[in-house]
Image (tube, rainbow, N blue to C red; front, side):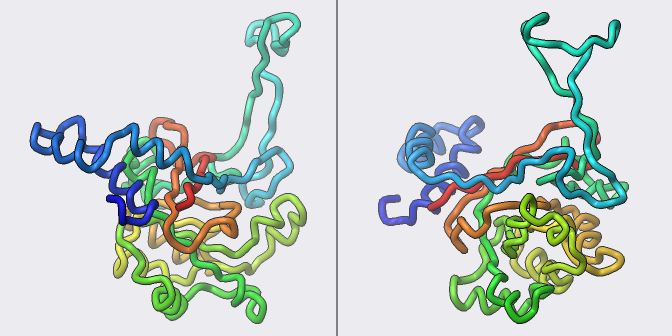
Length: 275
């Protein structure tokens, strides 16, 4: 593995290790030769991590149909008195919000009554190779550009074929308006994916999931791109951040979320491991 790029070495190690528990002796021997969990961690811990998640509060942007979150101090249900460190030795928040709040995961069941819910999404899909499509140069002349298949093919001429099994993220730099200019962040229309690009990525390139900085996948009235990908068993991350700090290829993305039974969406934590 010495001559392989660092990002590829990490992916190979993690892929091999994911099946180690069930591997027969011969496979275990091959795994020992390829690398160990300690070696994988040594590589990963030496890399730069980039947080791809927005912090959220009761004041941050959300679709008007959902309404703002509320945070309040958790209280004793018998007395109604909020817990305090002085009297109880601890304190807690009570959070009231819709699942699709802040940086969040949309599972297939968000749009598809027969689709997988959050607790059914595979663990192995929580760490994936990451590709980033930088659309910011196009936005100088077309502020609401929707990424096209031609744009994707131009990206491939520069960086190589989009790898199957990857997470595809759309960089627009909208995330910079999340706190600084909320009205601009919530603008409509906004830079987004085109339906044709989404279909191409899943059907022709075999990506696993996609993500973007906006609160929606596209600007069509029927949310055509979002509806299609969720109804075809895929999932996505919305309201991503800091994609301008991640290279076009070579990084890994790690995404985690809570496991509510039959969950239809929830704030998520996503970060990139740079090559």
